[in-house]
Image (cartoon, rainbow over all chains, first blue to last red; front, top):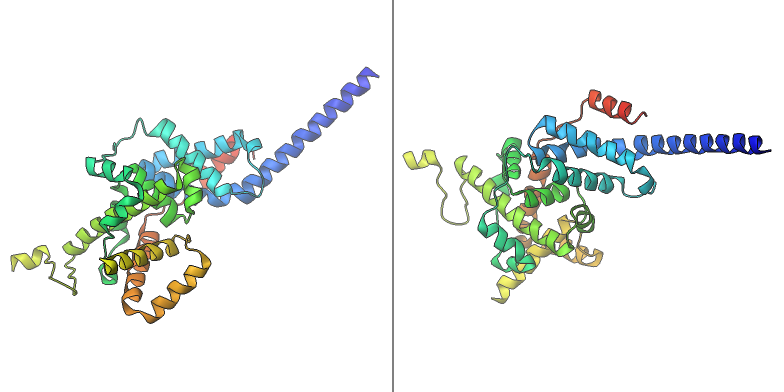
Length: 217
Length: 77
């Protein structure tokens, strides 16, 4: 009798294990792996290099596998994976970052000002300014942002996460997400404007912005 | 001063619209204003160009099939 119970129990354990493996396989194939390129892009812009980005992506999937029982099938897999990656980056890669992020005093002050800094105004750039921009300039501009600002741009403008999702991914209040986005976009516009000036852009609404070559003439 | 505030509010709404955070009823109002008000239309198009540039211009680095295979092997899929 005891032997029979043991065999039945062992058999049901095997069935359960097999079911768990099937569930895990299904989730990885249908919900997790479709986001691997998005994760890689995020990892690349956090770590600045291919090798670290690949390590981060790999670590993210290994952690997702380890904690798969905490994931509810059919929910927001992308946000869940991005949160794992962000935490992995903070825990292990930020310390040994090859390019430490510089945050100047002004950034810190404005960063803590939350939405009140909207009063200082939006940086207005005209449509034409973007016409001659290359992807390289955008990448350099994004990568030059301090990490907290870069992160919200990547999550919102590149990956299309909502404020609520971003707040959960990076563990900050929604107001902070909005404030960082506002600041980050203004910083980006400033940087892109500088590139545009170098390319010879002029703002037809007001005084002309001269390029280096114009000044030489 | 009032005009400046109105412009700031409009810009804020445009920003929320592109962030998909503007309530649906306000979306309709905004899109109507974009169609009928040249200044609003210009602001809207400027912001759209900026967002498009960021989204399309950023460097994307696809994952190699080898990395996917390595991950699958490590988690035994």
